[in-house]
Amino acid sequence: MITRAAWRQGLSRAVRSPVAALLALLAATTCAAQVAPEGPFEVSLTGQPTRYLVEGAPYRITGHGGARFGMSVAELRAVIGREHPKALASLREDADPETGGVAWTIQVPSLAPAALPGSLRYHFGAHGGTDGGTPGGRLVAIDAEWRTDGPATAAQRTALVEAAKAVGATMAGWRWPPLATARGRLLPDGTLIVFAGRDAEGAGAEIRLTGVDVDVEPRARTAASPARAREHRVAPPGPSMLRLRLAAAPNPASAPATASAASASEPVQPVAPHRVTGFRSARFGMDEDELRAAIARDFGAAADALQVTGHPTEGTRALVLRLAALEPGPGAATISYLLGATSHRLIHVNVVWSTGNAPDEAQRQRMVEAGGQLARYFQQLGWRPGATTSRLAPDGSHAVLFAGVDPRDAALELRISGVQVQRLGQPAIAPRGPAVLRVAYFATSAGGDIEASPPGAP
Image (cartoon, rainbow, N blue to C red; front, side, top):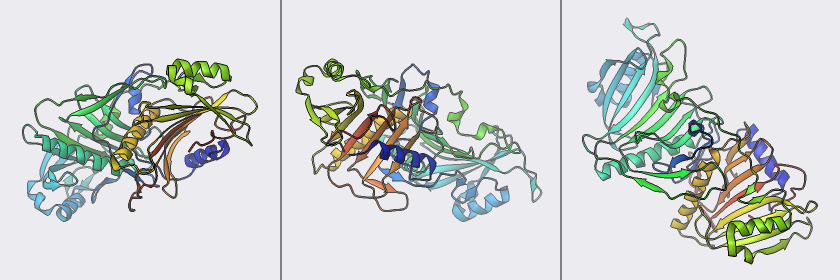
């Protein structure tokens, strides 16, 4: 059972202090805000990580390997000589229209993590003085690129998608500023932005895939909207490409900001404020008769099986509904509607999916996928600035995939347990017990009539 005060304390602490951020096919999203607030948006699952990697520190984009932003051409040549000595012979210098300076490109026989031939392109700004008599600026952006020669085979496309997962898992597991990342965004030409983000200093990173099959979920912007069918879009014949773009923060003394993450080049439209009003037709403030009628509208004959439970000391009363299936979670679900002890009106809703006590790996993974789908949906809504978070429990027992407070102080929390989690640089934590996914909706984030979760809630 989670008390309302404890939930608020956890959220507040996560917002104020450097607690662990969570990667789970999710990150707080802004680029999706480029869709009109009332319209649907699409999210692609392709290339998204399938394991939880968590790191407590803020992510800083400083370069690639030993190459660091701000290096001179001589300093970078020394780095290439150490890291890719055989590639020095392939070094090509071109004028760089993006920065107004020059670009160096080298070919690497096997560039991790794709284990495929790749190229590294280093962009220098137009300014920066001279270095050993050679005019030129400083290093401002780096592209790591894997591209097939000619039409891609199914194996090559799979290798590129797996490499995108590996790179994305490393990046998204760190802490990023609020509303500074995007995931799974499909562009009109079929290019997939697997991940894009800016660190606290404005440096950018972007992972993009072209020429691969994608799975797309159309999503509406209202919580009551039913899940829509996933669509598999087959890439047309031709080459495929994975590109990691890393760009320094814009600097008036260097090149124009065109070397920044490409997804940031489009105008961002504001997202309409989201309100947590309840679950489907059940609205906070309803009395029991009104609530029963709302449940009947949402679930039809299943509402006849409503059970009533009460908390002996807190005086709360819950209507509990068990369903054989509820999208987007896998399998059976339990919905608990909590009525306040003094108001006798709806103040809290729990939606819980749970496996048996000994689920197999496939069952745990399906719970992970459902959690990621819900997290991406919630992240793209308009929340109170600075009032969203994700975090991993210190003992690894559960992860809060998303928690947020709306502009009117109603709150939502998405939590998962019984799945594999991992902190960066540490061994994975093996899951134990059932896999459980829970969405909790709260009428207010603190005080008032919000005493506790319904009895039996995780």
